[in-house]
Length: 491
Image 1 (cartoon, rainbow, N blue to C red):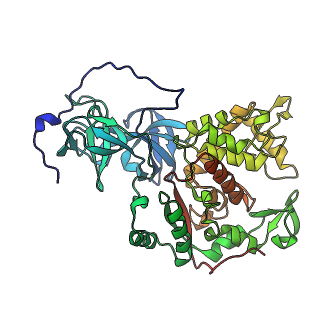
Image 2 (image 1 turned 90 degrees about the vertical axis):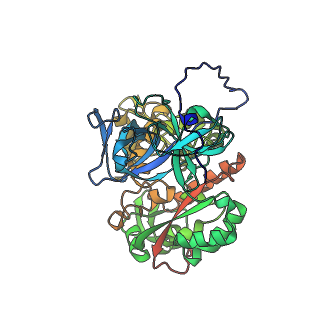
Image 3 (image 1 turned 120 degrees about the horizontal axis):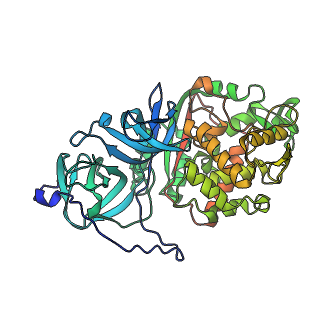
């Protein structure tokens, strides 16, 4: 246990200093920074996003229950109390930035970056020198920083910025002025165990605690040996397999291309030109997570929020290179910029565009609607009627997507608002909506193509492999159904 030895050394005094910061753009070196966290609105009536951290502040929007948010920092409204009602978060949600009350947010997951104390420093229960002190760190102590925090502005003798740090299983706050960030390798999902350092017994126990059936475990064991940094999170859908399958085989919910054998189809009706209703065996195979817990397709279960560390223009460019998208002005930089602005993985955006229009389409070549060129690389709104593509272009016209950049930015914003922030934050969940209860299963799904997650996962894997990203500390969320069959196979 760390004991307090000198309280005078633990006051974070405000100082004014000047520094020359050299940013080495040419060499690719960047200063370490504190990552954002992620969370979810937990309020049946929603939560008001405000311009400042006060209930009297102007409203920007109302965030519905279960909306996914990015948390940039904590803001304390009391000098001595750490109660959640006295704390706010600065967040980004649905493309807007503002403040929400902390007591309306749950499922918080932190990233982390390593730091080292520059002097003896107190750690406290909250941000600010009036908060209760729990102990002190010695000079040179390595700490894990997970988020920024601001104390009440009028707290005498307190620095404006504090760091929230993790010590063991608990979180404390320290003055940022006395901590040097030393490692720019951000580790995401910090609230999960250190998978890389688990013993075999600990890993087995973890899989059991997550509720994974035995039919999942062998696949995880293989991946864990190959990629010890990877983590696997189970999501219990509380949904019977046959019930979910029934919803996914209803009407035109799941389609298969006519280029596949007739045994893949259920009937001869074309729901869209060249697309048929998929047979129940085909739907079952692509809905079964166990078939894709492998090196090539696990990426359909990856979190689709933005991670600057490896969502770079080089990686995105590798996805776009084999397609016709760059030739029409859809550059990697456009996707990265849109991803960062909307907290969406640009790798996912590029993979989705490649899947939808990468082979060439009137949706990306500047087709005119009412005399105006429009673009829709994600085919948003391209469904229904005898000409879904035209419907998508009309949709793009209504949205003002008159350049490739506007189309990617607008599409990213809609994907974030309508899918990623609504619990459908993996490609799998966008295809199989089992994250929002049984009543919504089979509805509000981005694509009808039953094989879309399979294809997009392959694109992601290829680009990650090319740029050496496969061993990043990725975490994948895999759904678990009740009453699953022993296995599923294609016809």
